[in-house]
Length: 319
Image 1 (spheres, one colour):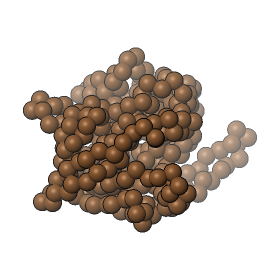
Image 2 (cartoon, helix red, strand yellow):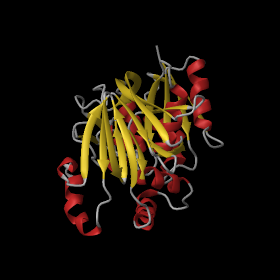
Image 3 (cartoon, helix red, strand yellow):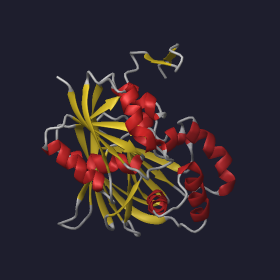
Image 4 (tube, one colour):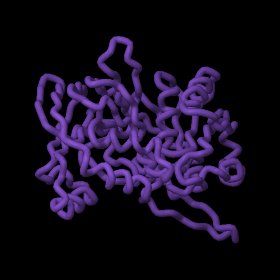
C-alpha cells in the first residue's frame, strides 16, 4: 500500500530552495511508494492547521518543505497523532534535518524519503505558568535568554540565512544582559545568572552546529546547558570548543541532564522552540515525552544512489 503523504510548502521560507518543489517531486519521489498531494501555506501557522487536518483525514505522513519554522509548525499540528513527520530542508538553519543526516539539497532529501526509514524519537512538551497556557512541542532544541531573543528578532528580519542570523547576533550581543534564573531539575533546584539556558533533545542546532555532546533524540532525557555571557576576548577560545562539540569544557558553560525542567525568571517571557520565538511567560515548564514522534530520517546503512542528468550514477557516502 502506498504511503499517503501531504507536502506542506512554505512559499517564502528561508533561501528560496522550495520554489521548484513540485517539479523535484515528479522527478525524484518514488511514485510506486507514495500517493501524495502538495499544499502551500497562506498565513502564519497555516502549516499547523494543514498538518492537523491531514492527520485527521488519515494521511500516513506529512512533509514540511521549508526551514525550522515550517518544521515546527507541522510538528505542532501532528502532536498526539500517529502521523510520520518528513522534512525537505529549504530554510536557513535546518537544525533537525542536520541531526537526521538529511541532505541539504531538496532533490536529494526527496530521494532519502524513498528509503522510508522511520525513527521514533522523543519530544519536549513546553508550557507556560498560566493554567490555560498553550502547549508546544519541541523535537530539536529550545531555550530562554539570548537564544530566544535572537529567534524573536529573526522572525521580523528581512534578510534570512546565515548572513541575516549573524548580523542580528552581532547587533544584539552587547546590549543583551544576563538574567537571574531558578531551575528545578527533577528533585534538584539551581539558582544561576545566565545569558542563555539551552534545552536539547538533539545534539545539533541550525547550520549543523554541535551544541551538546550527550544529547540524543531518543534517550528520554533533556540536556540542559547554562551559558554565561562570553567576553569578546574569550570567543577565540570558546568557538573551537563549540565547533568540535566540546562546549562542556568551557569555563562559561555548565551542563545538566533531567527528564523535566521548570525555569523561573524568564524576564522577557520569550522561548525559542526549534528556532521559533514564542511568548510563554516568566515561568516555563519543559517535560520530556519519550518516543512520541515518528520521523523519516536518512538510513545510513544504505547507500543513497542517484544519477546525473547524463545517467551516470553517483553514490553518496554514509556521512
